[in-house]
Length: 99
Image 1 (tube, helix red, strand yellow):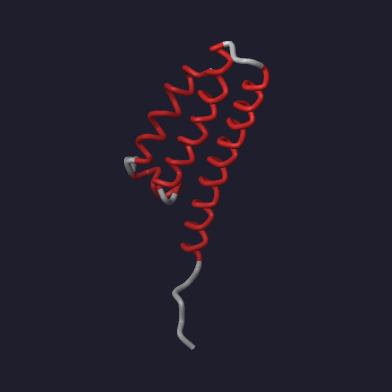
Image 2 (spheres, helix red, strand yellow):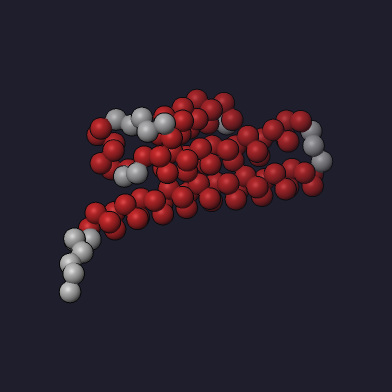
């Protein structure tokens, strides 16, 4: 699982964070850099959860790292969703009019 995440999510997250996205995807994902940081946070959950298990750490350390991995995954999903929501709400709002 760690290898598959490293092959898929890591390069995609790094590319999006560096503001490298195909033109056909830019219109759909909105702000590229925050979405890239969200993808990297989701990727970070895999090593944080897997490395202590591979190292043979105690059950307490594995539990804390699994919880931290869940928090990282949730934070990445929220960052991506909030940035896309803010982008879409800005796109649908009309120009501000002075009264």
